[in-house]
Length: 295
Length: 235
Image (cartoon, rainbow over all chains, first blue to last red; front, side, top):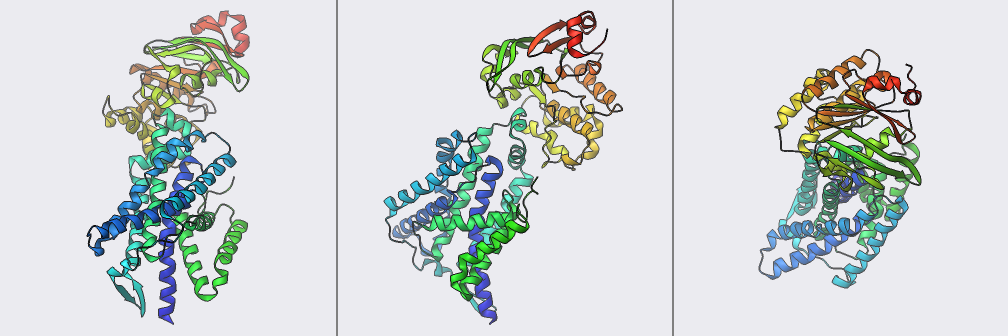
């Protein structure tokens, strides 16, 4: 009984760890650039596929399997640089446009990236096989949990703390909070918004691609994984509050654990349960648990 | 130092500024006086690069400003404090003041610039780690001016620095501005109330419906009936 509970809980927390990375990317971009980036899910998928390829290349060239997490993370981070291209090449032209237009543009990106993934990696799911079992299994209260999952949870926690430190303690963080508050005033104090936007968007993209790369050893990469994740990331953001990092953290835990519970108790309920929570939050606290109170 | 030459500015389809010219020389305190809607804020915002003039030009220390972006204009040495103060509510008072020492490094050391900013309005020191929203309107105005000063600018652009202040605070702010000019900074002030024009102002422009209708010394405006009518003063 306890073992079963721990299994469900750890599965949920693992999923939450991944979900937090993607949602954090979504939040930081929305907070500063005021764009709701649907393509965060596609970046996640892109990171997953790149991770599989990076690990494949590494092991094929004699890299020790136990070190697979290094090419995995590096591949995930490196492909996040695509954020520079997307921001400079597309998004910067729509900052002053209507929100609907911005949403449509990021949705177009979702479709394009999904096709790009199919063209590059094909339509069949790809995976890293059982590589992640290299790290062995840990026994927690009678349950068996892959050590890899614990590493990912720890890494995600470390990244959460790192983002908190970046935003509150560094010059870059203070500048982006100022820019998020009042863009025009920040410019009048010498802040170059181009410099801020390209960095913030790339940071957001890298969080998504890293999340995709880290999830993949425990599952398989499929071209539609991005769309599925957008739905969950959207739920996280609604529950936690748009633009709030603390909200992304709590929202990811809520969605991750609920999903895990639903899957083990009554799988048909999985998405429905998340939507019910989203609706409840929208009715009870429309700006989310940690969002700014609506004016 | 600053030369605005016959600028025409349109916002959407409206012609807001008509061939506006004005000049601020070294160490001068110049006031741009006019009613609400006369074009004062638009003039300052055009200098800061938020609006592009359709005709004419703006030069600052012989650099053409009307081709530059706002952050470049700030880094050239123009400190701006807008009418609504523009305090970043998410940052502490100290962080609000420090921000320009990060965006415009070089010149005098940051510590010296911050010390100079706090010396003008010492009351800000006690706020240090508190956040912007906890301050009164007058303190926000002071913070906004101190923050612009920490940029170490050659010149300050202040939009309605006395607006909404309690009568008790007006002399404090005026004394602060006087101190700023003593240290060698020039100031351009937009002001809707002629009685707020500080006595150390060196020159005055009156703007009405987007046009400059008077330029001269503060004493001379009392002899100009049309200008007086525009700003609601009496002789």
